[in-house]
Length: 245
Ligand SMILES: Nc1ncnc2c1ncn2[C@@H]1O[C@H](COP(=O)(O)OP(=O)(O)O)[C@@H](O)[C@H]1O
Ligand SMILES: [Mg+2]
Image 1 (tube, rainbow, N blue to C red):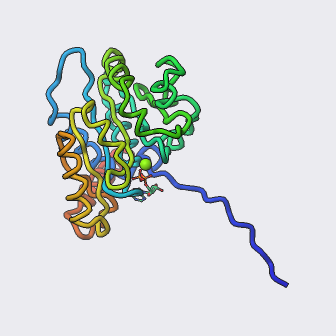
Image 2 (spheres, rainbow, N blue to C red; image 1 turned 90 degrees about the vertical axis):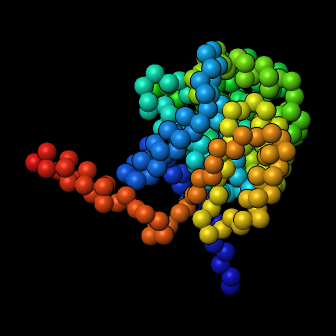
């Protein structure tokens, strides 16, 4: 007789620096924050808007967006909004244990007021999230609609920094519709996986949309391949241990 094992529900692990604050990872996000922050001039009364995208799915766009939003919010006096504009595979709300029922799609479709579409992230001062909302049948249309202009000009009045997580450029055109509303685009690529051609295709498409590309984050980089800061991590740890003893 055959025995069928019930398929286990997959439990995804999310790598936020809140849950797992590894020294060199936290430092890498701080460096990224500094780099993107200073690559865009400050304009009075307007938030700095950064978009994250990649060539392919599952390269770490949402992980990077969530962690960079946390890193921004950890600075004092900076009010940060993280928007889940992946209206096809929304995940950001899960990183923070929040609901996706109300969010971007509801606002863009004119179903809800802005304040009903934004949630405060518990336990992190200054961090807010606009989840995807109900996944719509026409994401490309919604993201290219007039309401986008309304959205970003309203957000300017409330937030200092807006981070937008998007779908992969080589799969759907959604991210390109968001380009005109952001100050800069950061690409995420996977070490040893994303090919040069894939990245080049994505960059080409973004440039046609007039994107200002700020740089590329190399995700899942094996540290043995690169100069590691581990020794500094140990240095700080041993300092703390010494002062505590
Ligand atoms: N640097 C990393 N190390 C380990 N796991 C990662 C890393 N970056 C992403 N992941 C995992 O890979 C999966 C896809 O990442 P995600 O950020 O959702 O990709 P995308 O938004 O580009 O589709 C998630 O389960 C995430 O936790
Ligand atoms: Mg994602």
